Image 1 (cartoon, each protein chain N blue to C red):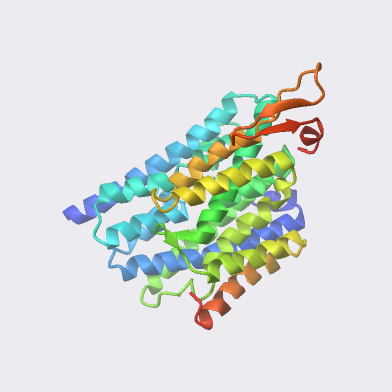
Image 2 (cartoon, rainbow over the protein chains, first blue to last red; image 1 turned 30 degrees about the vertical axis):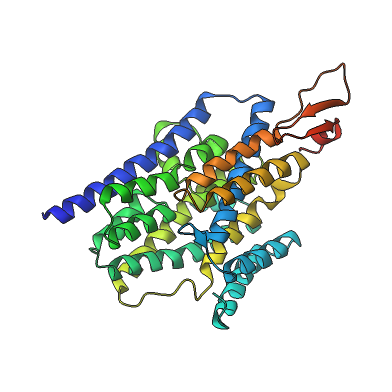
Length: 108
Length: 251
């Protein structure tokens, strides 16, 4: 085995072990505690905040820079449709289609 | 798998299929991009099975392909995956008991499976939605990656297909129902601002964790029977009058 192969294997293994550890710690902690209503409310708020921050950064930022208008426009249209209770598949396809069409006409 | 399929209501099951299809195409792109970057055929496949976290896989391959150090690549990947810890804490009850369930279920924890679990009522429905999404996504993602790595030479342009807009839209559509309360809205607003303001300066993954500070802005007022309306100092520095109505809308 070449040194490059060993390096890649070790990197893949380290990311796998570290990622599983992160997942396990959260799940195991949850199994140990029986959260009170108040703590449960905090957990629910926390996960809502986490997801919304993820949506915001995944929509607007890539490699620490603004991604351009096509992606946020697509997500906005998808969000609007979801808010108006459109079927899930319509939301997803509309979001992708808006971004794709904007790029087709030259908006990045 | 069939039992899981039956335990999940048809509309949720259909939504899970849509997510699987979108992620399968992204997986295909991941496989093709990895091979296009000159990496060996086994690497994207191995990563997808043992890491199973898309954003960190793209980061790892990206850093390696651009000549960065392996250590930096792993660190960047782990930072992006750090949010899985609080996600596990929030929806860990969907995994179930027993050591193999804990191990396998933890591995199947992704943004998507967590979001599908979150919107279900606690108990059997939540467990079924989590496992169905986790297993189906694992299969589609890995099939996509293997196919992409095998084809290799033709890299699909996921940006031209607009698929980069699909992921945030998927999560947004899933979490929209839990954003009804004013208090959660306030926490979310603060969190989103924190994440966006810090994004240009911090490595990917960290701003999302910092956003959790927003939870402080959504802390429920301490209920004291003596005062129905009590002035509360909120964490964003303003002093507001908080009554009982807000806590009632939280459910």
